[in-house]
Image 1 (cartoon, chains in turn cyan, red):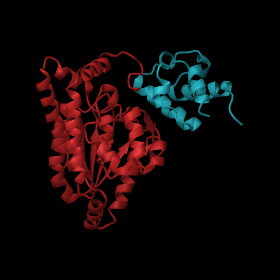
Image 2: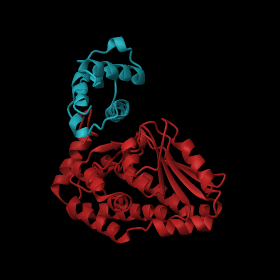
Image 3: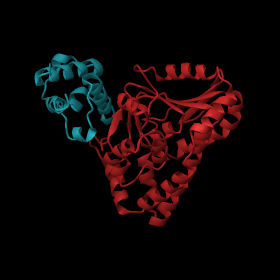
Image 4: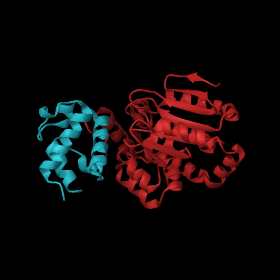
Amino acid sequence: MRRTLKQTIDEILSLAATHFKVPKEQLTPEDDFFKKLGIDSLQALELLTRLENHFQVELPDYEMQGVTDFRTLAERIQTRL
Amino acid sequence: MKNFKGGTLSWELVDGVVELALHRQPCNEIGSATLEELERFVDALVTLSGEAHALIIYSTLKAGFSAGADLRELYRRAQGMAPAERVAGVRQFLERIHRVANVLDASPLTTIAAVHGVTFGGGFELALTCDLIIADKLARFCFPELRLGLIPGFGGIPRLKRDLGNAVVRDLLLTGRSINATKALAVGLVSQLTAEGAALRVARSTAAQVRKFDRRTSEAAKKFIKPIPYEELRREIEIFCELFSRPAVEAGLRKFVESTDAQRYLP
């Protein structure tokens, strides 16, 4: 069964919390993940790869250009599921 | 020289395997300092090859294998130079890096790139000189050069074309998008996919396997199956220099160097 947007957001927040050592309860869908996770552009690529591996999708980086919050990220992933 | 510790890279000969470690912060950007040490390495490789059967190239940095050419240095050096002087400088750099890449490509040893994280541009091109690419599952490959108004200049396209279908090459080149290691394995770019942080260990185990075979046979097999596209490599330098003289390149470099955008690595 296809994931709902809510499930996708939840999985993204869990993955981000685990790998970037931020308590999940401190993350919300509207957060700017660069600021909240304290990541730079190279680490953003790591996040992108982790998301691709987790959801087993390809996320062309040009589609990620300008995306900074978890919700929009989840919406982009949804289009590939 | 069996062991060397430089500012950007180090090498050592361990149990018949030459290990070349890249360690220039932040992500092994290839500028003149790295080039000089790579030249020292390929000169030493002639002697090392007599005592080894394999070469492993890897990075000790968490960010990845290499983010490619040092664009800051390229931009800084070009400042205040006349266009013709600028092109002459870049041509000289390309001639030197191509010599390094060609020596690595033609090495009689079985060569393995053990990559993780960012493997972009010139870093990707360095990996492509190797016989095998072993990638950890967080590795990412990209040719972002077109956004600077350039093509890859360290031999990337001819070597990628040698290994992969032209459609994949065009996808990577013309969209500038990056692909992960799983995709790279699926298209035949990567020969083995490993767990996070395990690429070097798997490369060492592969090098130990290679050692079981007669060195001359491996060398003959490699020579037969891995022709070096010298003509296209020469053409690449010409196209790169032609493009480099355009104002769009300076603008692209300035934009990258001065950017504070959190996503500046994305094409």
